Structures are given as structure tokens and as C-alpha cells.
Length: 343
Image (cartoon, rainbow, N blue to C red):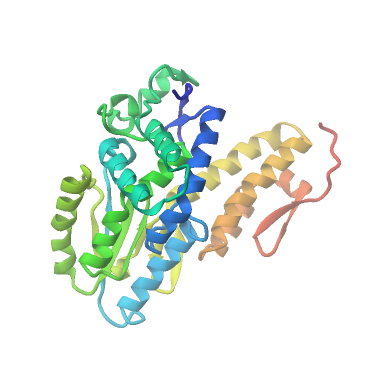
């Protein structure tokens, strides 16, 4: 029997429902994933990017950019990009399909003495319903503007993994592993990459990509009980720019998306209010440094030098310039001194 989870709603980067597992349960999650991950990594394709050591968003973005460059022969011939998204992915993962697949995989690949224990723990985690007797953090009204299709409270009894658990993230990758191999091996598509439920295929034939949509829809529905998001089907010439993981991938350059720009600006506004009200305490200065550097650390990977320069010089309060300075060409903020009148 697992413990009570804490449920709350986050607004950024997008509005979503989170379930935070109890500390005791998180130990079980980490134990299970630490046992399984080495075996998962042997069967996962290289171009599954989420929640994997040495992968991640930057790796995925650069891989898709490389695929486009290769498919277009360094931007000298036509190629097209198909980008699709699975609707309500985590909330529609079928627990029976997941567990049966995991049971078969572990029985076949894992031969240690604790196999029965591992399977028992995974079964408890997969079939646990975190909505039962959970602790609501914040206000129940936080769920008012959250679509019902995005809440585990409205999922079918046999479906849904809670966003926020380590096991959910890794089991989600495992759930789509067969789909990855279907695309890569059965359909023989080389230029393919996936980050959670967001995936991209690049090909020279636009008509072929258009026909693929129905093939993909059938596979997801029949094998996994999933559907493509009807409003998130993107098929364009590569020169139009490919939106992927918060960036826009264009020939020879990658720009940051509008949502990240807006969040960066809003963070500046929040810290400006503090500096304009009083001399920031040491803690507030460090929070400012941490927040700004997280954005600058992300932005510096892409074609954003002018954006960073304009955003900071145009919007950042002069008070912050008295307490900090920039290092590495708009790459990070450094505090001028740790001494402050605040605590």
C-alpha cells in the first residue's frame, strides 16, 4: 500500500496537474528505476530524448536540426517536417498494457534474485491511484481552469500515470519504445526523434509524410490506446521553421520560442518590483541571480545574443546593475558582493 500523494496545479511552463509522492514512495520509485534503467537503455533508440543521461532538450533540438540539414543536403533540396503530439499522453497510458509489457520485458531480460520483488513493486506503483485520499495543496479552485482531459481525477480507472513521479517519466518512455522501433525499423525512417509525446519525422516526400499520419494513428490506437492531438499536426517545408521543445529550428540557426521569451520577461518584472521597493536582501539577490542565470543558461545555446542584450538593458531595473555584473557576454550574472544590509 502506497502513501498519500500531494496534488497541486502548476501554471508554468504550461498549466498542469502534479502529484508529489510521499518520501517513502519516492524511495521505492528510485529503487525500481535504478534496477530497470540499465536494461531499458539497451533497448531504447538513441533518439528518444526525455529523462535520459546524455540526452535532454538541447540534445534533441540539435539532433532534429541535424536531421533537417542532412535530409535537405545542407539546405539545397526540398524536405518536409511532420511534427505530431499525443493527446493527453500521461493520462491515457493504459495500465494493463504497460504492466503486461513490463512483465514480459523483465521476465525476459532481468535474471537477478530480486526479480519477483521488483515486479511486485512496479505493479503497486503502476496500479496505484494517487487521487484516492490525496492531499490537495493550494485551492480546489486551481483546477477550475484546468481542462478535464488534463486531470487524473477524470481519467478512466485503468488509465493514467501521475505527472511528477520518476516512475511515470521512465515508464512513459518504455510505453512508447515499441512505437519508436515501429517508426525506426518497421517503417525504416531514419530521421525521427521523440521527446515524451512530442515527435518529429523528416522526409523528402511531403505526400509520404501525409500518408504516415493515418498509419501512426492506427498504431497508437490499436496497440497503445492513444490518440494524436487533432490540433497539433504540423507538416511544413523545413524553411518555414520547425517549432520543437520551445525553439524554432531554421536553416543554420535556432531561435527561442515566444513562451520562453515571455517567461524571461515576467521573471525580470517580478525581480524589478523587489528592487524598486527596497534594497534586496542577500537571499533575494541570490534568487535573482539564480533565476536570471537559468534563463541565460538556456538562451545562450541558441541564436539569442541580441535578444539577451535587449531584454536586459531595456527592461532590467538599474538597481540590479548596482548589485550585479554580467560575465561571459550576457551569459551569467555575478553578485558584486555578498555584503548586504538585509539578511
